[in-house]
Image 1 (cartoon, rainbow, N blue to C red):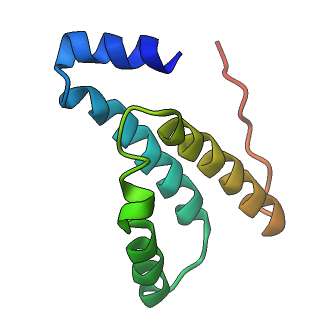
Image 2: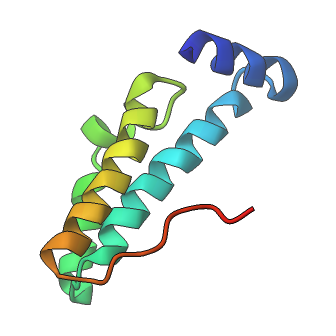
Length: 96
């Protein structure tokens, strides 16, 4: 699956820009879960600094299964945070 998507993006966008969609989905996964936390600005800066370290940032910014895993785990963590905080359930069904 990763070869299919990465190769398809590299044909249309070039070998370097093919990583951009994977960077965007990993950033959205992180954003989704961090947005649900009630952090102060100091805590947010510390968390984002930790997530910007090369051991995390390099592996989630290339076309790989890690970028997709960060996206899915961020979404799941966001739902878990909502459950812990007793936020009302959101209607996730698509209305056609």
